Image 1: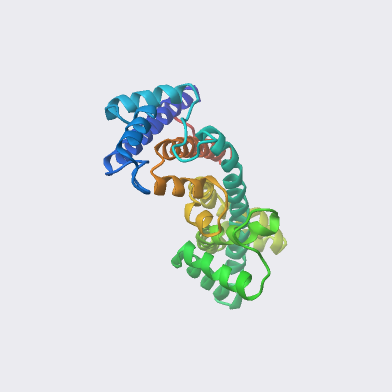
Image 2 (image 1 turned 90 degrees about the vertical axis):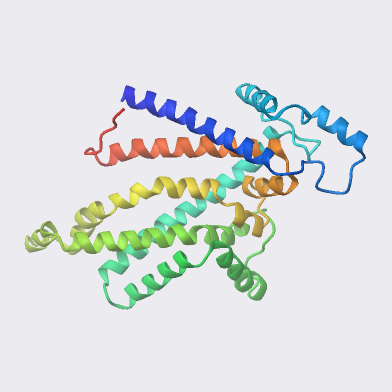
Length: 306
């Protein structure tokens, strides 16, 4: 366990450092700057702005300056928001993104398990065909198309749910459904195939032959063994839902870090892009680390090795 923690800790630091370095290089490789995207700025003012934000320094010097500030917990000033720095902006936006991601995760897991189990128990019957169609739809249709369809049907035509705001739980329904569609379909297909395989195993037939109630056989034997492969993909799914909601947040005007990152990219707000990337990188590393620990708890056959 100790060697595992040390190795994962070192890998985490190296991973985050690589993410920071690549993002920094890519940002500064694109022509232009944060003050050249809008109307022309007088050369004297542009020179003063670049000097104030140290943008006139060599790129390598800017990089080490940023890393030094980062080690002190300072993500830097926003070039576009004069009243708040990046720390304050992320402090306000991250809870919204986390809430949306966790809601989508709950919907995806519960819905995917239910559809997958139901589909396998009613194999080649109507419930199976319905679940299969939904799974194929969720897998093949992009999330932004699903988001557009949800807005058109439930918001524009039926007026059931509002959009472009984030004031109550009712406003979170459509973004949650749009974000959870793809992982729900993925879990449905995996759970269905696992259940069909497990239900044909000899120990399931033996349990039935012993006269055990069918519900007990399904819950205690079939689901328990079929769900393990699903758990193995929850790490990447969780990481994606918590950090990968850029398009959904932009479409629904959700005031989260995803929308903020997209706006930062459009505005060439270097500090905001870097700060969001660092936070996302740390979140990914932590989530995957926690999932590794959960694997060993759920299935003792999985050993943590350094």
